[in-house]
Image 1 (spheres, rainbow, N blue to C red):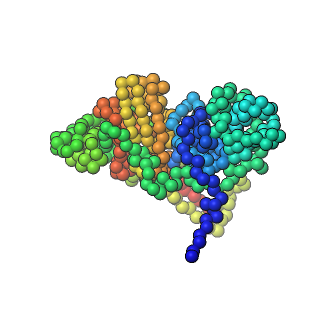
Image 2: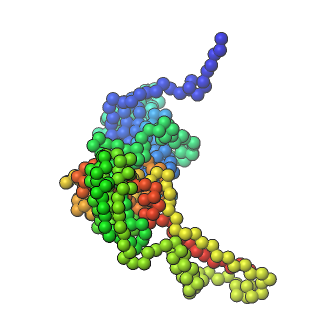
Image 3: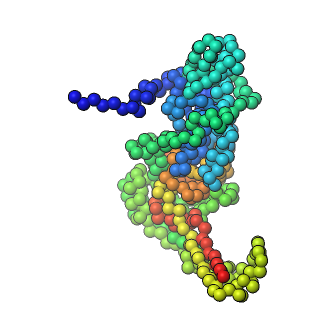
Amino acid sequence: MLLGFNWLAGCRPAAKGMPETWSNVNAFLKIGENGIVTIMSPNPEIGQNVKTSMPMIVAEELDVDWRDVIVEQAPLDTENFTRQLAGGSQSIRRGWDGLRMAGATARSMLLAAAANRWEVPVAELSTDSGVIIHANSKRKLGYGDVAADAALLSIPPSVELKDPKDFKIIGTSRKNVDAPAIVRGESLYGLDFKRDGMLIAMIEHAPAFGARLKSMDASAARAMPGIRDIFTIDATPADRHWSTVNAFPEKVVVVGDSTWQVLKAKRALVLEWEAIEELESSDQQAQRMADLLSQSKTRPRRRDGDPEAAFRDATQVIERTYSAPFLAHNTLEPMNFFADVRSDRAELIGPIQTPEALRNTVATTLGMPVENVSVDMTRMGGGFGRRLYGNFGLEAAIISQKAMAPIKLVYTREDDITQGTYRPAYRVTYRAA
Protein backbone atom coordinates (compact mmCIF):
# COMPACT_ATOMS: atom_id res chain seq x y z
CA MET A 1 0.00 0.00 0.00
CA LEU A 2 1.31 3.46 -0.94
CA LEU A 3 0.21 6.49 1.04
CA GLY A 4 0.84 10.09 -0.03
CA PHE A 5 0.51 13.36 1.85
CA ASN A 6 0.87 16.96 0.63
CA TRP A 7 2.02 19.26 3.45
CA LEU A 8 1.07 22.39 1.51
CA ALA A 9 -2.44 21.15 0.77
CA GLY A 10 -2.85 20.13 4.38
CA CYS A 11 -2.02 23.63 5.58
CA ARG A 12 -4.45 25.45 3.27
CA PRO A 13 -8.09 25.93 4.26
CA ALA A 14 -10.83 24.67 1.97
CA ALA A 15 -11.73 27.10 -0.82
CA LYS A 16 -14.49 29.48 0.24
CA GLY A 17 -16.08 29.69 -3.17
CA MET A 18 -17.51 32.77 -4.82
CA PRO A 19 -19.76 35.02 -2.71
CA GLU A 20 -23.44 35.46 -3.46
CA THR A 21 -23.37 39.15 -2.55
CA TRP A 22 -20.69 41.84 -2.56
CA SER A 23 -20.36 45.04 -0.53
CA ASN A 24 -18.40 47.90 -2.09
CA VAL A 25 -16.36 49.36 0.76
CA ASN A 26 -14.46 51.80 -1.45
CA ALA A 27 -13.34 52.14 -5.08
CA PHE A 28 -10.40 49.78 -4.50
CA LEU A 29 -12.19 46.83 -2.97
CA LYS A 30 -15.38 44.94 -2.35
CA ILE A 31 -15.99 42.17 0.16
CA GLY A 32 -18.25 39.13 -0.16
CA GLU A 33 -20.41 37.77 2.63
CA ASN A 34 -18.01 34.83 2.98
CA GLY A 35 -14.93 37.01 3.42
CA ILE A 36 -13.59 36.83 -0.13
CA VAL A 37 -12.12 40.22 -1.10
CA THR A 38 -11.89 41.60 -4.63
CA ILE A 39 -9.17 44.24 -4.99
CA MET A 40 -9.04 46.45 -8.06
CA SER A 41 -5.65 47.05 -9.67
CA PRO A 42 -5.81 50.60 -11.06
CA ASN A 43 -2.79 50.79 -13.35
CA PRO A 44 -2.22 49.17 -16.76
CA GLU A 45 -0.50 45.78 -16.63
CA ILE A 46 2.31 45.55 -19.13
CA GLY A 47 4.26 42.64 -17.69
CA GLN A 48 5.78 44.61 -14.80
CA ASN A 49 3.43 42.73 -12.41
CA VAL A 50 1.67 45.75 -10.89
CA LYS A 51 -1.57 43.77 -11.14
CA THR A 52 -0.09 41.63 -8.37
CA SER A 53 2.02 44.13 -6.41
CA MET A 54 -0.48 47.02 -6.20
CA PRO A 55 -3.26 44.84 -4.68
CA MET A 56 -0.66 43.37 -2.29
CA ILE A 57 -0.24 46.85 -0.82
CA VAL A 58 -4.00 47.26 -0.34
CA ALA A 59 -4.29 43.77 1.15
CA GLU A 60 -1.46 44.49 3.59
CA GLU A 61 -3.20 47.46 5.17
CA LEU A 62 -6.59 45.75 5.01
CA ASP A 63 -5.04 42.83 6.93
CA VAL A 64 -6.62 40.11 4.84
CA ASP A 65 -5.34 36.64 3.99
CA TRP A 66 -3.86 36.86 0.49
CA ARG A 67 -5.44 33.48 -0.30
CA ASP A 68 -8.85 35.14 0.07
CA VAL A 69 -8.06 37.87 -2.47
CA ILE A 70 -9.31 38.10 -6.05
CA VAL A 71 -7.67 40.72 -8.26
CA GLU A 72 -9.47 42.52 -11.08
CA GLN A 73 -8.18 45.11 -13.53
CA ALA A 74 -9.88 48.43 -12.85
CA PRO A 75 -11.24 50.48 -15.76
CA LEU A 76 -10.16 54.08 -16.30
CA ASP A 77 -11.75 56.01 -13.45
CA THR A 78 -10.21 59.44 -12.91
CA GLU A 79 -12.65 60.29 -10.11
CA ASN A 80 -11.47 57.47 -7.84
CA PHE A 81 -7.96 56.68 -9.06
CA THR A 82 -4.92 58.84 -9.81
CA ARG A 83 -2.21 58.40 -12.42
CA GLN A 84 -3.60 55.34 -14.20
CA LEU A 85 -0.51 55.21 -16.36
CA ALA A 86 2.22 52.65 -17.06
CA GLY A 87 5.40 54.60 -17.73
CA GLY A 88 8.56 55.76 -16.07
CA SER A 89 8.55 52.89 -13.55
CA GLN A 90 6.35 55.03 -11.29
CA SER A 91 3.26 52.86 -10.59
CA ILE A 92 4.34 51.66 -7.14
CA ARG A 93 6.23 54.83 -6.25
CA ARG A 94 3.34 57.14 -7.05
CA GLY A 95 0.61 54.76 -5.90
CA TRP A 96 2.16 53.69 -2.59
CA ASP A 97 0.40 56.16 -0.27
CA GLY A 98 -3.01 55.93 -1.93
CA LEU A 99 -2.99 52.13 -2.00
CA ARG A 100 -2.06 51.91 1.66
CA MET A 101 -4.74 54.43 2.59
CA ALA A 102 -7.38 52.49 0.64
CA GLY A 103 -6.66 49.31 2.57
CA ALA A 104 -6.31 51.03 5.94
CA THR A 105 -9.52 53.02 5.47
CA ALA A 106 -11.51 49.89 4.64
CA ARG A 107 -10.08 48.11 7.69
CA SER A 108 -11.03 51.08 9.88
CA MET A 109 -14.61 51.01 8.57
CA LEU A 110 -14.88 47.26 9.17
CA LEU A 111 -13.67 47.73 12.75
CA ALA A 112 -16.21 50.51 13.28
CA ALA A 113 -19.03 48.32 11.96
CA ALA A 114 -18.04 45.50 14.32
CA ALA A 115 -17.78 47.90 17.26
CA ASN A 116 -21.30 49.16 16.54
CA ARG A 117 -22.67 45.64 16.42
CA TRP A 118 -20.99 44.54 19.65
CA GLU A 119 -21.43 47.94 21.32
CA VAL A 120 -17.79 48.11 22.36
CA PRO A 121 -15.06 50.72 21.79
CA VAL A 122 -13.15 50.36 18.54
CA ALA A 123 -9.93 50.54 20.53
CA GLU A 124 -10.72 47.13 22.04
CA LEU A 125 -10.77 45.45 18.64
CA SER A 126 -8.00 44.03 16.50
CA THR A 127 -7.78 42.20 13.18
CA ASP A 128 -5.92 39.17 11.92
CA SER A 129 -6.09 37.91 8.33
CA GLY A 130 -9.66 38.98 7.63
CA VAL A 131 -11.03 38.33 11.12
CA ILE A 132 -12.09 40.99 13.67
CA ILE A 133 -11.33 40.02 17.27
CA HIS A 134 -12.66 41.31 20.59
CA ALA A 135 -10.18 39.78 23.01
CA ASN A 136 -12.09 40.75 26.16
CA SER A 137 -15.18 38.75 25.22
CA LYS A 138 -13.36 36.27 22.94
CA ARG A 139 -15.75 37.10 20.09
CA LYS A 140 -14.81 37.03 16.43
CA LEU A 141 -16.37 38.24 13.18
CA GLY A 142 -15.20 37.73 9.64
CA TYR A 143 -14.89 40.73 7.36
CA GLY A 144 -17.77 39.34 5.32
CA ASP A 145 -20.04 39.42 8.38
CA VAL A 146 -19.85 43.22 8.68
CA ALA A 147 -18.94 44.32 5.14
CA ALA A 148 -22.47 45.43 4.29
CA ASP A 149 -22.64 47.56 7.46
CA ALA A 150 -19.16 49.00 6.86
CA ALA A 151 -20.10 50.06 3.33
CA LEU A 152 -22.78 52.36 4.79
CA LEU A 153 -20.41 54.21 7.10
CA SER A 154 -18.75 57.55 6.40
CA ILE A 155 -15.12 57.47 5.35
CA PRO A 156 -12.94 58.31 8.37
CA PRO A 157 -11.00 61.58 8.05
CA SER A 158 -7.73 59.90 9.08
CA VAL A 159 -6.46 56.37 9.68
CA GLU A 160 -3.34 54.83 11.14
CA LEU A 161 -1.05 52.92 8.79
CA LYS A 162 0.90 49.82 9.73
CA ASP A 163 4.43 49.97 11.00
CA PRO A 164 6.57 48.35 8.26
CA LYS A 165 7.93 45.87 10.82
CA ASP A 166 4.41 44.40 11.00
CA PHE A 167 4.08 43.77 7.26
CA LYS A 168 2.95 40.24 6.38
CA ILE A 169 2.45 40.57 2.62
CA ILE A 170 4.65 43.44 1.47
CA GLY A 171 8.20 42.19 1.15
CA THR A 172 7.17 38.59 0.52
CA SER A 173 7.10 36.69 -2.76
CA ARG A 174 3.64 36.16 -4.27
CA LYS A 175 2.78 34.47 -7.53
CA ASN A 176 1.60 36.51 -10.50
CA VAL A 177 -2.20 36.62 -10.15
CA ASP A 178 -2.60 36.18 -13.92
CA ALA A 179 -0.13 33.28 -14.22
CA PRO A 180 -2.71 30.44 -14.20
CA ALA A 181 -4.82 32.17 -16.86
CA ILE A 182 -1.74 32.87 -18.98
CA VAL A 183 -0.63 29.24 -18.79
CA ARG A 184 -4.12 28.03 -19.69
CA GLY A 185 -4.33 30.44 -22.63
CA GLU A 186 -7.41 32.18 -21.26
CA SER A 187 -8.55 35.52 -22.62
CA LEU A 188 -6.46 38.31 -21.09
CA TYR A 189 -4.95 40.34 -23.90
CA GLY A 190 -6.47 42.78 -26.35
CA LEU A 191 -6.08 40.33 -29.21
CA ASP A 192 -8.15 37.81 -27.22
CA PHE A 193 -11.10 40.17 -26.82
CA LYS A 194 -14.33 39.27 -28.63
CA ARG A 195 -17.82 40.76 -28.64
CA ASP A 196 -20.90 39.41 -30.41
CA GLY A 197 -21.41 41.31 -33.65
CA MET A 198 -17.85 42.66 -33.64
CA LEU A 199 -16.15 43.21 -36.99
CA ILE A 200 -12.41 43.14 -37.70
CA ALA A 201 -10.60 46.16 -39.17
CA MET A 202 -7.11 46.45 -40.64
CA ILE A 203 -5.26 49.41 -42.11
CA GLU A 204 -2.79 50.37 -44.81
CA HIS A 205 -0.64 53.45 -44.43
CA ALA A 206 1.97 55.12 -46.62
CA PRO A 207 5.15 53.05 -47.12
CA ALA A 208 7.46 55.94 -46.23
CA PHE A 209 7.48 59.28 -44.41
CA GLY A 210 6.76 62.02 -46.92
CA ALA A 211 4.28 60.01 -49.02
CA ARG A 212 0.49 60.09 -49.29
CA LEU A 213 -2.25 58.15 -51.05
CA LYS A 214 -2.68 59.09 -54.71
CA SER A 215 -5.20 56.48 -55.88
CA MET A 216 -6.90 53.29 -54.71
CA ASP A 217 -8.45 50.38 -56.57
CA ALA A 218 -10.38 48.29 -54.05
CA SER A 219 -12.68 46.50 -56.50
CA ALA A 220 -11.04 43.08 -56.11
CA ALA A 221 -10.85 43.40 -52.34
CA ARG A 222 -14.51 44.46 -52.04
CA ALA A 223 -15.62 41.35 -53.92
CA MET A 224 -13.88 38.98 -51.51
CA PRO A 225 -15.92 36.92 -48.98
CA GLY A 226 -16.66 38.52 -45.62
CA ILE A 227 -15.67 42.08 -46.57
CA ARG A 228 -18.12 44.70 -45.29
CA ASP A 229 -16.51 47.98 -46.32
CA ILE A 230 -13.31 49.70 -47.48
CA PHE A 231 -12.73 53.41 -46.90
CA THR A 232 -10.15 56.00 -45.90
CA ILE A 233 -9.88 57.89 -42.62
CA ASP A 234 -8.00 60.89 -41.34
CA ALA A 235 -6.96 60.09 -37.76
CA THR A 236 -5.32 63.43 -37.05
CA PRO A 237 -6.08 64.06 -33.35
CA ALA A 238 -8.04 67.19 -32.48
CA ASP A 239 -5.76 67.80 -29.50
CA ARG A 240 -1.99 67.73 -29.98
CA HIS A 241 -0.22 65.90 -27.18
CA TRP A 242 2.94 63.82 -26.97
CA SER A 243 0.85 60.64 -26.63
CA THR A 244 -1.21 61.41 -29.76
CA VAL A 245 1.75 61.30 -32.16
CA ASN A 246 0.77 59.63 -35.45
CA ALA A 247 3.17 59.64 -38.38
CA PHE A 248 0.48 58.40 -40.80
CA PRO A 249 -2.95 59.79 -39.86
CA GLU A 250 -4.29 59.09 -43.38
CA LYS A 251 -5.12 55.40 -43.67
CA VAL A 252 -6.98 52.96 -45.89
CA VAL A 253 -9.28 50.75 -43.81
CA VAL A 254 -10.66 47.29 -44.60
CA VAL A 255 -13.56 46.05 -42.45
CA GLY A 256 -14.87 42.49 -42.50
CA ASP A 257 -16.05 39.47 -40.60
CA SER A 258 -12.79 37.73 -39.72
CA THR A 259 -9.09 38.46 -39.39
CA TRP A 260 -8.11 36.13 -42.23
CA GLN A 261 -10.74 37.50 -44.62
CA VAL A 262 -9.73 41.09 -43.90
CA LEU A 263 -6.01 40.30 -44.20
CA LYS A 264 -6.50 38.72 -47.64
CA ALA A 265 -8.55 41.71 -48.80
CA LYS A 266 -5.93 44.11 -47.45
CA ARG A 267 -3.32 42.34 -49.56
CA ALA A 268 -5.58 42.60 -52.63
CA LEU A 269 -5.75 46.40 -52.49
CA VAL A 270 -4.08 48.26 -55.36
CA LEU A 271 -2.72 51.45 -53.84
CA GLU A 272 -0.64 54.14 -55.49
CA TRP A 273 1.35 56.54 -53.32
CA GLU A 274 2.95 59.85 -54.22
CA ALA A 275 5.77 61.79 -52.62
CA ILE A 276 4.78 65.18 -51.20
CA GLU A 277 8.25 65.90 -49.82
CA GLU A 278 11.63 64.26 -49.70
CA LEU A 279 11.14 60.66 -48.56
CA GLU A 280 12.95 59.83 -45.36
CA SER A 281 15.30 56.88 -44.95
CA SER A 282 17.57 55.40 -42.29
CA ASP A 283 20.66 56.52 -44.22
CA GLN A 284 19.31 60.05 -44.43
CA GLN A 285 18.59 60.18 -40.68
CA ALA A 286 22.06 58.81 -39.87
CA GLN A 287 23.69 61.48 -42.03
CA ARG A 288 21.63 64.24 -40.39
CA MET A 289 22.74 63.13 -36.95
CA ALA A 290 26.38 62.93 -38.06
CA ASP A 291 26.12 66.48 -39.44
CA LEU A 292 24.58 67.75 -36.20
CA LEU A 293 27.28 66.09 -34.13
CA SER A 294 30.08 67.57 -36.23
CA GLN A 295 28.55 71.07 -36.02
CA SER A 296 27.84 70.92 -32.30
CA LYS A 297 28.81 74.06 -30.43
CA THR A 298 27.44 72.97 -27.07
CA ARG A 299 29.36 74.26 -24.07
CA PRO A 300 30.54 71.69 -21.50
CA ARG A 301 28.19 71.24 -18.56
CA ARG A 302 31.13 70.35 -16.31
CA ARG A 303 34.87 70.86 -16.46
CA ASP A 304 37.34 69.27 -14.04
CA GLY A 305 40.99 70.30 -14.25
CA ASP A 306 42.61 71.04 -17.62
CA PRO A 307 41.27 68.52 -20.20
CA GLU A 308 43.02 70.28 -23.12
CA ALA A 309 46.42 69.78 -21.45
CA ALA A 310 45.57 66.19 -20.57
CA PHE A 311 44.78 65.34 -24.19
CA ARG A 312 47.82 67.28 -25.46
CA ASP A 313 50.26 65.47 -23.17
CA ALA A 314 48.67 62.01 -23.37
CA THR A 315 50.64 59.09 -24.77
CA GLN A 316 47.50 57.84 -26.53
CA VAL A 317 44.16 59.35 -27.44
CA ILE A 318 41.28 57.10 -28.43
CA GLU A 319 38.21 58.45 -30.22
CA ARG A 320 35.18 56.33 -31.06
CA THR A 321 31.69 57.11 -32.37
CA TYR A 322 28.74 54.94 -31.40
CA SER A 323 25.26 55.07 -32.90
CA ALA A 324 21.93 53.31 -32.94
CA PRO A 325 19.18 53.90 -35.52
CA PHE A 326 15.49 54.48 -34.93
CA LEU A 327 14.11 51.10 -33.86
CA ALA A 328 10.57 49.73 -33.66
CA HIS A 329 9.56 48.58 -30.19
CA ASN A 330 8.48 45.18 -31.60
CA THR A 331 6.08 44.26 -28.81
CA LEU A 332 5.08 40.61 -28.80
CA GLU A 333 1.40 41.54 -29.16
CA PRO A 334 0.81 43.80 -32.20
CA MET A 335 -1.25 46.96 -31.76
CA ASN A 336 -4.99 46.35 -31.46
CA PHE A 337 -8.05 47.98 -29.92
CA PHE A 338 -11.79 47.40 -29.67
CA ALA A 339 -14.18 50.31 -30.16
CA ASP A 340 -17.95 50.58 -30.14
CA VAL A 341 -18.93 54.16 -30.97
CA ARG A 342 -22.57 55.14 -30.87
CA SER A 343 -24.19 58.55 -31.38
CA ASP A 344 -23.97 59.43 -27.71
CA ARG A 345 -21.15 57.30 -26.28
CA ALA A 346 -17.95 55.42 -27.04
CA GLU A 347 -16.68 52.22 -25.44
CA LEU A 348 -12.99 51.38 -25.85
CA ILE A 349 -11.25 48.20 -24.68
CA GLY A 350 -7.65 47.23 -25.26
CA PRO A 351 -3.96 47.34 -24.32
CA ILE A 352 -2.90 50.92 -23.59
CA GLN A 353 -0.34 52.49 -21.25
CA THR A 354 -2.04 55.92 -21.26
CA PRO A 355 -5.81 55.31 -20.97
CA GLU A 356 -6.69 58.82 -19.77
CA ALA A 357 -4.88 60.50 -22.65
CA LEU A 358 -6.62 58.15 -25.10
CA ARG A 359 -10.04 58.90 -23.61
CA ASN A 360 -9.47 62.64 -23.82
CA THR A 361 -8.23 62.46 -27.42
CA VAL A 362 -11.16 60.30 -28.54
CA ALA A 363 -13.66 62.62 -26.84
CA THR A 364 -12.15 65.74 -28.41
CA THR A 365 -11.74 64.22 -31.88
CA LEU A 366 -15.25 62.73 -31.97
CA GLY A 367 -16.80 65.85 -30.41
CA MET A 368 -18.19 63.86 -27.50
CA PRO A 369 -18.32 64.71 -23.75
CA VAL A 370 -15.38 63.06 -22.01
CA GLU A 371 -17.70 61.43 -19.47
CA ASN A 372 -19.37 59.54 -22.35
CA VAL A 373 -16.13 57.80 -23.33
CA SER A 374 -15.10 54.71 -21.35
CA VAL A 375 -11.75 52.91 -21.52
CA ASP A 376 -11.20 49.40 -20.17
CA MET A 377 -7.66 48.04 -20.06
CA THR A 378 -6.61 44.54 -21.04
CA ARG A 379 -3.31 42.97 -20.12
CA MET A 380 -0.61 43.99 -22.60
CA GLY A 381 1.63 41.62 -24.52
CA GLY A 382 4.56 43.97 -24.11
CA GLY A 383 4.73 47.71 -24.46
CA PHE A 384 8.22 49.08 -23.87
CA GLY A 385 6.85 52.59 -24.43
CA ARG A 386 5.09 51.88 -27.73
CA ARG A 387 1.69 51.79 -26.09
CA LEU A 388 2.26 55.14 -24.44
CA TYR A 389 1.18 56.43 -27.86
CA GLY A 390 -2.47 55.59 -28.46
CA ASN A 391 -2.92 56.34 -32.17
CA PHE A 392 -4.34 52.85 -32.75
CA GLY A 393 -7.04 53.40 -30.10
CA LEU A 394 -8.14 56.65 -31.73
CA GLU A 395 -8.12 54.99 -35.15
CA ALA A 396 -10.34 52.19 -33.80
CA ALA A 397 -12.86 54.76 -32.54
CA ILE A 398 -12.92 56.64 -35.85
CA ILE A 399 -13.33 53.38 -37.79
CA SER A 400 -16.18 52.22 -35.54
CA GLN A 401 -17.94 55.55 -35.97
CA LYS A 402 -17.60 55.43 -39.76
CA ALA A 403 -18.50 51.73 -40.04
CA MET A 404 -21.41 52.23 -37.60
CA ALA A 405 -20.48 48.96 -35.91
CA PRO A 406 -18.35 47.61 -33.07
CA ILE A 407 -14.91 46.76 -34.46
CA LYS A 408 -11.55 45.48 -33.34
CA LEU A 409 -8.63 47.10 -35.13
CA VAL A 410 -5.68 44.74 -35.58
CA TYR A 411 -2.28 45.83 -36.87
CA THR A 412 -0.06 43.33 -38.64
CA ARG A 413 3.56 43.14 -37.54
CA GLU A 414 4.56 45.04 -40.70
CA ASP A 415 2.01 47.78 -39.98
CA ASP A 416 3.49 48.43 -36.56
CA ILE A 417 7.16 48.23 -37.54
CA THR A 418 6.64 50.84 -40.27
CA GLN A 419 4.22 53.04 -38.29
CA GLY A 420 6.85 55.42 -37.02
CA THR A 421 6.58 55.36 -33.23
CA TYR A 422 10.19 54.40 -32.73
CA ARG A 423 12.77 54.31 -30.00
CA PRO A 424 15.02 57.39 -30.31
CA ALA A 425 18.07 57.29 -32.53
CA TYR A 426 21.44 57.86 -30.90
CA ARG A 427 24.86 59.09 -31.98
CA VAL A 428 27.73 60.10 -29.71
CA THR A 429 31.50 60.54 -29.97
CA TYR A 430 33.79 59.71 -27.05
CA ARG A 431 37.39 60.82 -26.66
CA ALA A 432 39.60 59.34 -23.97
CA ALA A 433 43.23 60.09 -23.14
